[in-house]
Amino acid sequence: MSYQNITLNHEDKIAILRINRPKKLNALNRETIQELHEALTEIKDDDEIAVVILTGTGEKAFVAGADIAEFADYSVEEGQELAANGQDTLFNFIENFSKPIIVAVNGFALGGGLELAMASHFRTASTNAKMGLPETSLGVIPGYGGTQRLPQLVGKGKAMEMIMTAGMINADEAYRLGLVNHVFEPEDLLEETQKLASKICKNSMVAIKVAIQAVNAGFSYNQDGYAAEIKAFGEAFGTEDFKEGTQAFLNKRKPNFPGQ
Image 1 (cartoon, rainbow, N blue to C red):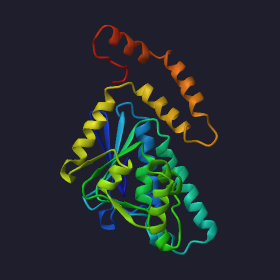
Image 2 (cartoon, helix red, strand yellow; image 1 turned 135 degrees about the vertical axis):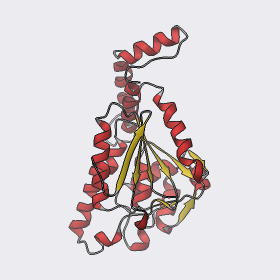
Image 3 (cartoon, rainbow, N blue to C red; image 1 turned 90 degrees about the horizontal axis):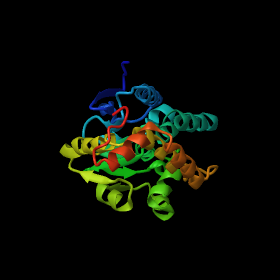
Image 4 (cartoon, rainbow, N blue to C red; image 1 turned 180 degrees about the vertical axis):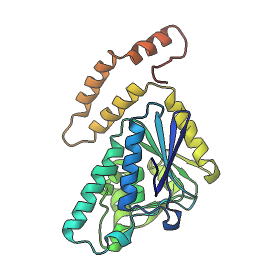
């Protein structure tokens, strides 16, 4: 499938999904959100892909925010529809995606860009990365999950400060706060993130899928995370991956999980 605003390629079970609107600093619009959804749906059904790295074209920006010109004249109803559709189509879709998604933040991740990064399973960043939620400077608030996910990652107080001041933090502070897991030089960002993805590929993708579900259950208002973990843990005993993993351990060899 061909796309206008993104590129997709993969090798060694790792997909590289790039937002490709460099003249707009990779700003998100409705079309890009829909294309990302379609690409991820394609990836979800592709047994040759185990892990996804999501990044932006160029070194200036991962995503410098939403495309403000697209919604500047929206009504209240249209604004609510924009947020609801975006969350359902992409942001919640990413958070609950069955394969690991790592965002490599190359440059600015502002507004919808930071929200997109936070929806992923974890994040790496280049040393020149800048992150923030500047929506209050426009008279609006984050609408793609930012008011919910940022406090989960950095704590309520810091999230309140970042949202209220509309300020940016650099990569080092993002690392200190736990917003990103690793910081690399710009020229090393993708390669080092691929190394992390390769480590993931060595493990049971069946187990990783249910681990994602169990972790997310703990952050859901209507689920018991501990109960979800117990159920998923027990069900793992009935999988071929469990049999292979335990036999490999007992026989002191590397596991060869189905689908690897």
